[in-house]
Amino acid sequence: MSLPTVKAKLLEGRKGLIVGIANNRSIAWGCARAFRAFGAELAITYLNDKAKPYVEPLAGELEAAIFLPLDAAVPGQMEAVFERIAETWGELDFVVHSIAFSPKEALGGRVTDVPREGFLKTMDISCWSFIRMAQLAEPLMKRGGTLFTMTYHGSQVVVENYNIMGVAKAALESAVRYIAAELGPKGIRVHAISPGALATRAASGIPEFDALLEKTKVKSPTRELVDIDDVGVATAFLAHDAARLITGQVLYVDGGYHIID
Image 1 (cartoon, rainbow, N blue to C red):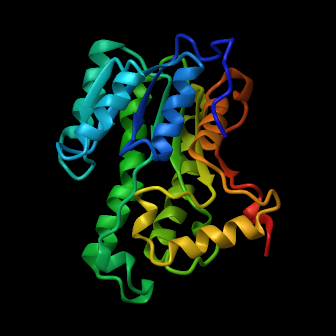
Image 2: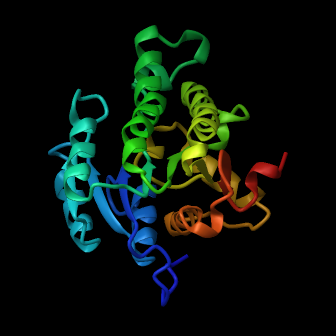
């Protein structure tokens, strides 16, 4: 899919933070492109100095007003990003959290055998970081807003080789529901977006991922794989006022794959 030609700037005047762009194949990049196409102003983060040369040109293409490092494992970096947003904009309308991590020794083995340290690191980056972002975003969402995070079908069923990340994503989806209930009275909506299998850098760490891609294409009712723009447009829609009474959802953007046994 390519982004549609947008004549109406449906999100014009909205301001949002996109976390998790690694390169032009990232799900976060698809989201950023869609939000920008619909007229939103963006703050973009990059993981570290190694990632910066890949992300900086993309942030320039988006005319990002804010461009800062954010490694959820580095104390203070997340807080610094939200402080800059408060100083620059004074408000925030949406956040896209598209980060997850599990150490190789934790992801590659059985859930039964996962080391405690690997489990805690997986949960910290993949789940708790979203909870912390919600906490930091709340006071800036003065007129309401929308919080998004990325999940995967392996949270609901056992997907071979997904292992401990499936456990973390299940916790993340539960957090989405609780945060939606807590922040709903303030007009803040919360969603988990569940894309089908995508050939991203993060997915490359999953063993036999190419086989999973082929299986997804064959079994999906639409008989095709989604791409990052499919995910981006669906996510951007949920930030619009037309979706103001939709919250606490796991939205599958997977060609219907999750409904097939």
